[in-house]
Length: 399
Image (cartoon, rainbow, N blue to C red; front, side, top):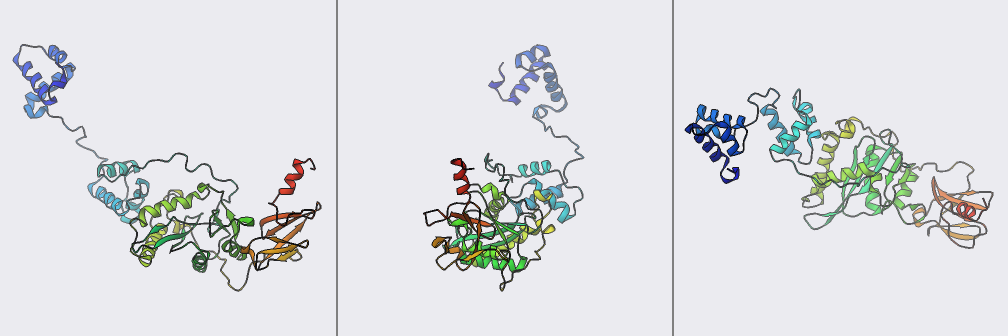
């Protein structure tokens, strides 16, 4: 008799009824119903002990589970997950002991099962290969304020129909979120205003890392914009990521995803409300949310403001005494060898360094940023890319 003809309960009851009739052996019935003799005896014994009700499927959970998570702890875990819907088991695990005095919180795997049981787990599709190995030429942050990462998160519409383009700044050593400004544009003016605010509160970093987009970079020599020229004038080194490689700012980009999930959807009614929301989230990100890269501690445990303060009256010394420099006029040009060379309007009002080599090549740079080079026999009235003449000489066998 195939088991699929009847429900499992009907099949078990028929097996027991035939066994009690005395006309069939247990071996025959086991063969007829496609089960083992042990299973057939089990159903017969259950029926004799408790009747037809005893033939129902029984829970396989142990009757006594000394390691079962206490109900009050399970309720706390569910409450914490609902308060932080984007947090996973590793972050949730930190809170019961840290904030609620639970002596031995459940393992992350147990917390994961609790969240699944309560329908609080959202499956996330893993995007393979999104973040390959980072650019080894970028500076590894070794202390607070060593490297700050800077970007504009993608814009979204507020309730009043205006755009919000958040300006974000983070310290890569501690993951501390320095700035989160609900800007309505991505201009040099609004970005500088946000940085002046951050510099006054936290001091100056040693390096600022940016992508190649406006207002942080430009298409001009050295990729410098007015904003990055201002940073350099304060004694801050500027570090550019590789075009099309967001993994070079991987930690900062990961923060953006969390920001989007927790603080931008749905958007607030207007800019002031969104800024208040950003301020609350920034405080939670820095002081409450555990970070796996920090051994589940918070950024505030590792960050401290810089001793280098913003001074609006003085600029950093970019060159050594005796260095040959040239002024950049208001149109962004310098006069070199009787010819005018464009170095970019971003550098207007500054001075650039001139370095002469024995081969007649003149290199031009602003602070430590190479802008281009010129050779005295060159006919063109524009700077060639740095290293151009060295490459040309090697191609033609002159080196």
